[in-house]
Length: 264
Image (tube, rainbow, N blue to C red; front, side):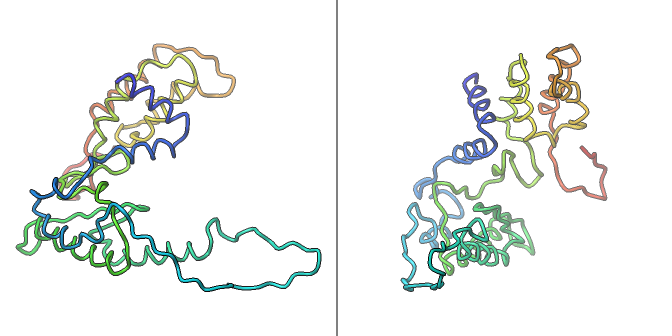
């Protein structure tokens, strides 16, 4: 576990992009057709096996020749600055892709290049039967528009899935136990850099800690410019309070107005 703490420290130092990439890379157990044979969804998955591939088919766009020609005055240089960070053709392709999946977002919302399909029992149909219907609708769209999913990175028929460092299920959202364990075993900071690293990783799960901003106030004071490093008993208490808050983290869900609930 000490090695995991050191690895997370380095990722926080490298930045949020590195942390997200690491989490995404390791959050899945590799899937295969053999491992899915016992799944009640196997028949549907095999029906659309062409969109669940390890290797995306390589297709070159049609050669259209010269796209345009701009006459320039002798001795002048053409402008190479783009109006958008991506070529306009790629921006349009992304917009078109989002429009395609919009028709199924009621049961298959997407986040960047990730998709999540959720189903529940409706009109006498079981949750598995509804899930099969939803899978067929999404896979049919993918097949029509030549979208592909990497089978190795897919999870099927799960009651809970990892999303952005949390676990999402029918009861709500809870923090990833692995990340909570790493934070709880984080050593006491001995300087500002180590404190920033701790608060950087804790911030990913701060929504589960009631009054998080108030609890870390003594720690935030140490990050102020020209502040002297003085790890007091109050700082230690705040440090422990964050860990304790994550240990007792509630399951977050949309409020049911007909029942009692607490706001975190």
